[in-house]
Amino acid sequence: MTPGLRLVTDLTSRSMPTAEFADAMSALASGVVLVTCRVGARPWGMTVTAFASASADPPTVLVSLGSETTSARAIRETQSFGVSILAADQLAVARLGSAPGQAKFLEPFVEPDEGRAASPAVAGALAHLDCELCEDVRVADHTIAFGRVRSVRASRSGAPLVYHGRSFRTLADPVHQPTEGNVQWLSS
Ligand SMILES: Cc1cc2nc3c(=O)[nH]c(=O)nc-3n(C[C@H](O)[C@H](O)[C@H](O)COP(=O)(O)O)c2cc1C
Image (cartoon, rainbow, N blue to C red):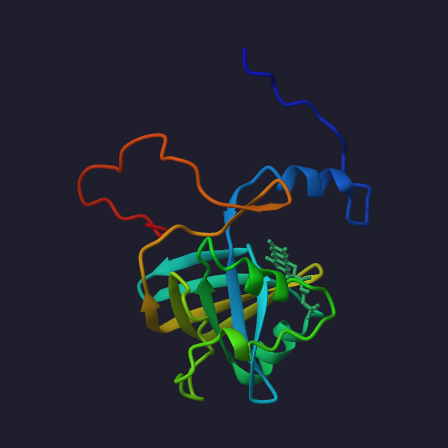
């Protein structure tokens, strides 16, 4: 029999982040993206799992970034950002982009010919979305940035990088066949 969910902690009286919240979130498997921007005109990127499509028409995405991160400040300043969806073999750039307080300049990892007007794209990413900031909302200690997608700059098929249980992983086999018909969800 599948075990039921039990109440671990009531968080309503807490003001600090709790291990219980982090433990619960670690149960969710997520794709990994690098949110890219420019810091002093140089390409910069931060590793993020809090990324989602927010609207299909016009295409709009959201990312949730710690408000005190260099990336959140740079995105507000430049009013634009990019999202590179990482492939399974891109652990090195995911590690660079997640080292707290460290420089996250991306020169060794970005497409060499990208123009200055657009956001930096990680070379070899599965896809890259170039976005204009259309709205940002502060929620507790994070800022949710909504980006109107200006262009999809690169795309290739391949296995994604996944994060689950505090570890980077690759996908296991599908558990069922793809849905039949022409159904399109926001994340399809
Ligand atoms: C797999 C993974 C996913 C992450 N996702 C997020 C996220 O969605 N939002 C966020 O603010 N930080 C996230 N982080 C943490 C940031 O990447 C990290 O704290 C980064 O160093 C913050 O930038 P800073 O050094 O400019 O403060 C994640 C880290 C890892 C390893």
